[in-house]
Length: 341
Image (cartoon, helix red, strand yellow):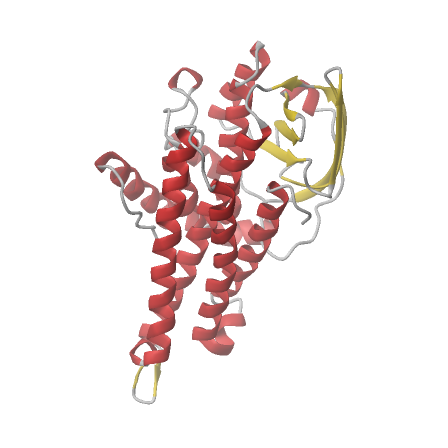
């Protein structure tokens, strides 16, 4: 279920086609396992590494391909149609890579090279009311009531009001994690409480820049979810018949489906434009555009549940999972903006 993005170069269009094939043929096949086990399997990460998707935004000398932020957003959107938890991991890989390459010492490049090989990062925003972080003389005291992927991560980036700090592999190994926390959706992201006292390295990349980038990539994943909801509902409406005609022939149903498609296209275009502005260090409206996208994913999913009627709430259909994922993704995005989740 690939996502068609506007204003792409021929190279990016080819990249999008490849991403769509990976999402439809490979990632979609493991969605049930992710739901049941609540874990992103190493084989799925290895697939993205082998396809050059996992850390595409890193420079070539660190194992990436130097992809633009727009292309990373493209990957997040298309991967999210199958697994939004995996799309969130792609976002955090990109953010962690940016922060690591902003460090003066070799440990930062070591983190970046490990990411290119498939290491998982954890990005923690101390702007959330769920996180307490203090850095004094290069020493971090961290208490996070909730951190996505912390248990499986090999390194971390902690974003504070005073800057962004990279926790390299050796230091991160000293963390203490609690049991996975309950949440509405996003199975596979595995949020856990985490505490850590460790030496850290400050990145030259600002906290605001990292937050903008992460919000845009989460927004792209939300657009992918909204798109998936619309396409699943459209398939259902074409196959389901009432009153002697298919559901999608009923004007009110067709209007709902068309409205979602139009809004998804609008949010895509806005996100793509903001990705370009952020890449070019121009003033952007990244936060408001990303917030609108994550909010709309919930709205679109609710509308598409209505298209399916009572069936929309059954686990036999993907719409109920998409709605749960959209709600959880919106909460994660709120934490990234520095707001309470």
